[in-house]
Structures are given as structure tokens and as C-alpha cells.
Length: 258
Ligand SMILES: [Zn+2]
Image 1 (cartoon, rainbow, N blue to C red):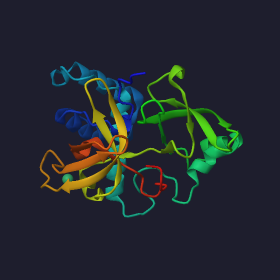
Image 2 (cartoon, protein in one colour; image 1 turned 60 degrees about the vertical axis):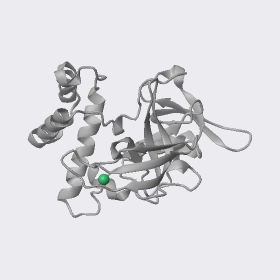
Image 3 (cartoon, rainbow, N blue to C red; image 1 turned 120 degrees about the horizontal axis):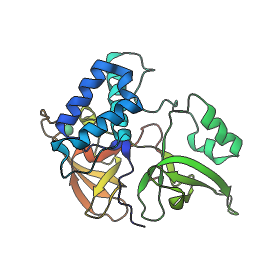
Image 4 (tube, helix red, strand yellow; image 1 turned 135 degrees about the horizontal axis):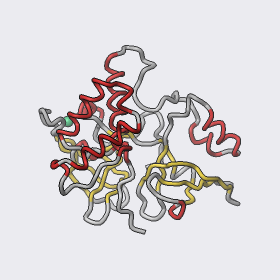
């Protein structure tokens, strides 16, 4: 199966400068209102009809909503000194994320129902191409004779025909977070990152490690640094910009999950 669409919509960074400016403006003016589906749909429509998007793939309302949500979280973080209002998923560090999925279906239900975990989002590694994709839902689970648990995942943007059984310990983890230009300093040599790999026939996210960072002065376009990364699956090196990288949530990065 060839996957043509990037599924990691939270990390979508293909907006034009004009579009980014427009979204920032809307967020400032309308706040929460701008996150609503109909507002995002309207915006997607107007973006897709604009000359600036000619020749580019159309944006979806979900991509717009995700972008706005991230931006808003970012703003909230900056305007409050409370450590509680931190960016990203709200689960405290000690929450046994995978354990919640490992056990019985009632445990899975608990994960779903627990308000503290309701914002947690997951990504799963496809056995077909070794790339990570965002999980829409966990369909069911099974325990293998070996005692290992597998979950059947539905990927965002794909139907039931693309569902996959994946090992819950090795191939499911909390979703990686897109990096904003201001977070560039968080990326260090040796870090595990998720890198958006753009090829002529497919665009997908692979695990990679940062081997070198060429820091540069940031300008109006944001981060100009160049990151030399090495993909884990084929050891190929590539120089990329920050916008193609996602970082692992720092508190949930089990060793050996690379
Ligand atoms: Zn930078």
C-alpha cells in the first residue's frame, strides 16, 4: 500500500505566510470561536481558492484547526506563569499511558473516560512502511500467546481497510509534537525526532536522530537553523529545517522505542 497523504495533521506546516498571518489574526480577534469547525471550514475554503495555494495541495479544515489549537496553547503558555498551563498533552508524567491500553477493555474505556487523559493523542508505527501515523482510534485489542498485547488501530485519514495490528509496547506511543520556531533550542544533538520525509510519491514521518545542528540567526521567516538528521530505518542522512521535525514529548520517551 502506498500512502500518499501525510497523516500527521498536527504537524502540518505547509501553510503560506499569508495564511499563517490570517490565522493568527483570526485567533487574536475571535479566540475560541476561530477553533470551531465551521469557522475552520470557511477558512480552508478561502485558502484553497486563493492564488497563493495554486499548485499546492489543498488544506483541510482539520489542519487549520490543529494549527490554531497549537498556536493558542502556545499563547496560553506564554501569558501565564502557572506550571499547570503547560503546552501539549495534559497527562501528568507518571500516568502509565501504555498500561492503560495494555489491559482489559474496561481499562481502555477508563482511558477514554478519564478527563485528564482525554486530550492524549497517539501515533502508531505501521508495519508496512515503518513510518509513524496518527491514530484515530483503537478498534480492539488482543493478547498473543507470547503474552504480548496488540491493538488494532485506525489511522487518521484512512478507512477500516487500512487498519493494522500493532504491538502496543513497541509501536504505539504518545503523539510527537510539532516544533515551533521558538522551540528550536529544545532540539539537541542525539535527540530522537520524528522527521517528515517528502518524496515524489509519498510523504511520511520516520524516526530519526539529530547528528548535527547548524545554528543560525532567526529572522522574520522563523528558524533558519539546519539540522542534519539520520533516519533510524535506513541510516540515510538528510539536512532539514525545523518545520519538518517533531519532538517526542519529553516525559514519555521509553528507551528502546526508537
Ligand atoms: Zn533555529
